[in-house]
Image 1 (cartoon, one colour):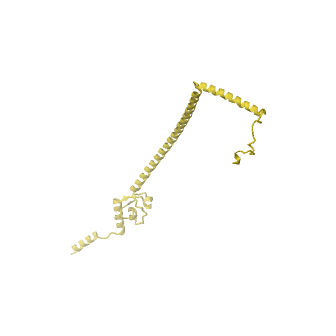
Image 2 (cartoon, rainbow, N blue to C red):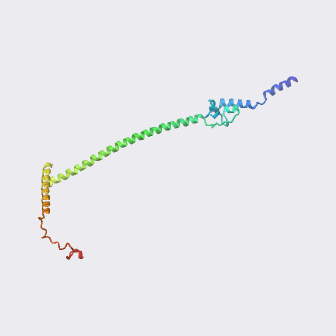
Image 3 (cartoon, rainbow, N blue to C red):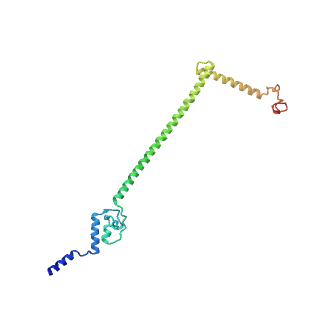
Length: 197
């Protein structure tokens, strides 16, 4: 019977409950082995160790093993890595879009300048064409043969007009004109003009 009771004691040693320290150590080992890396809690960050958790636990393996509170966020590192990578890609796309916008803006400025030049050339051509058509009509009307003949004719007319203007000015300023033959009686409104109606 002593052998049997001895056997019971050995069996009972196998089922002896673990202490809280041993439980924490076992849990920490399980988390370290099967957990996934997350953004480190302050304790892991200070010690420079990887911070791991498993789903359903609010503490990392280090904090569990020490029996301390844990300020872990629980966000997996690969999520942050994904977010960081995506942010970098977006920054690169943004920079490329800004560069493309800048180059297109410059191309637009160049195109606008070229368009303005073309418009100016077109306006100049239209103006010259209109002048040429007008001169052609004038040449035909006067029965002339060339633009040179038209220029000479206009120069002669201009000289005649200048002489006429000078003659008129000299007459006005020399009091040679006699206005006595004009009838100014209707000017003061005393006659039976239109004003009475």
